[in-house]
Structures are given as C-alpha cells and as structure tokens.
Image 1 (cartoon, rainbow, N blue to C red):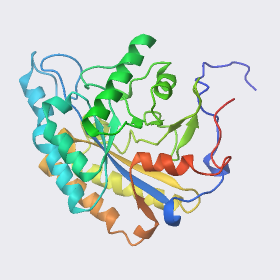
Image 2: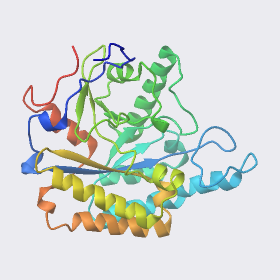
Image 3: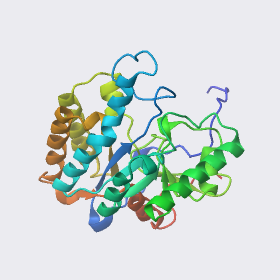
Length: 304
C-alpha cells in the first residue's frame, strides 16, 4: 500500500456505481435525459470566448459576430427544434443576455424552461476570485436570474466550469441546490460543504458540442453519432442503475444549420426510440427534487 496522501477535495465519498442501492425515476423510468443549452454573451474585443478558428487581430469582429450568431439565430433554431420534438430544456445562461436580448428571456419563460446560473458572461472566469468577491458575484447572478425569470435559480454551472476551492460552500450559502460542473458520475451525488450537503447533477464534457467540435474538430455527423451512442449505452446500463444522460449544447455551435440538422437526427432517434417508455425527459431541477426526496441512505452520503 502506498503511504502517500494526495491533496483531495473531501467533497464526496468514493463509491463504485456497481455497489449502490437501486432506485427508479418517476413512473419507474430508468434513464433521465435532459438538454442543457448554453446561452452566452461576450465582450467585443476583450476577455475569453469560444474560438471556431485562430483568433483574429483585436478586436476580431469576425469571432465576436460568430459568437453573436448564437443569440441572433442559433438559440431560436434550437428552441424551434425543441418545440418540434416536445422536449423540455434547461438553459445555462449568462445574465448579460437579459439586457442584450430580452426576447430570449421571454421565450424561455413561455416554454416553462429552467434557468441555470452560468455567470455574467463567458468573457470572464470567476475561479480566481477572492472568497468575498466570489460570494458577491454569485449573489449578483442569483438575483439577476430571479428578477428576469421570476424564480430563484436552483442550479449552477460556471462559465468554463471555473471553480475556486470555496465555490461549493458559497453556492450552498447563497441558496443554490445543486451544481453541474463536477463531471464525476452518471448519477447525482451528494457533496459536502461547510453549510450542509449540496447535490452534483451530472453534466457532460464529452457529449458536449464545444469540446467535441471546436477542440477535437469532430464533424456534425460524428457528434450526432456520439449522442446516439451515449444514449443507447446508458439506456442499456440503466437496467442496473438509474442514470442521467445530459446533452450539452451551445447556440453558436449546434445552432448552425448543418449542425442543427444532425442534432435533429440524434434527438429524433431518442424521442422515437422503441424503449422510450423507460426514458424520462426532464430538467436538472426535477432530477434534484426526485433524488432529494429519496429515502435516507438510498444515495451515498457525503463525507462526515
């Protein structure tokens, strides 16, 4: 046995998925499927941002305009597709979108969709903030979402999945129920914070158009096949454990017509699947509510 003790977060306990207690999603379903659409706003000529190709000379209007396509066109095509297939969605949304494109807020509210805290803008990262500054930042985002949507946000997924050592503690203390930027499992898990347990709801970094298409340069057809392959294998595995299949999307990426066509094929495969009676099409907050209501001891408790 090694005696070395590596630095560790002590946020969740190790638990093999094959050794956990079984439970079911509502109506006995086995696989929870949700769409996580990232709706983001960027600074012109400054800060971080997604890149389709090499960055241009600042202020790089080409790249800014490509990102802005997501708010002007892409988000609307995605919502049309979700409506066409009668699919709920959760939206990881920057709060600067609220003033920039208020029509988007109205559309999400009309669908009854969920707003997930996703920072102010993806032009910045908050993981290096001092703790007091980060707390003010989270409170600002929380309050802006509640004002715009009429509901307190319950979930958090940071821009760029950026996190400090204190982020889970601060999320719990500012009223969030769950986070989505610890991709450690295919089931929700309880995390330890200094103020009580916080849930982690699975969010994919692989079934995610940003790394697959922008970083690994996979084609739309390959991304379609990745979604279908993930769904099929998780559905098979869910006979033994209830699982979560998240699909992470970005408006400026899958909102492009030739990519949207492949997304449509993938989602049609899922909604028309012969075993769709085993599938729960849902949103992250509903996953949290179901798991939080399970009998004590069903899910693995966080470390003491």
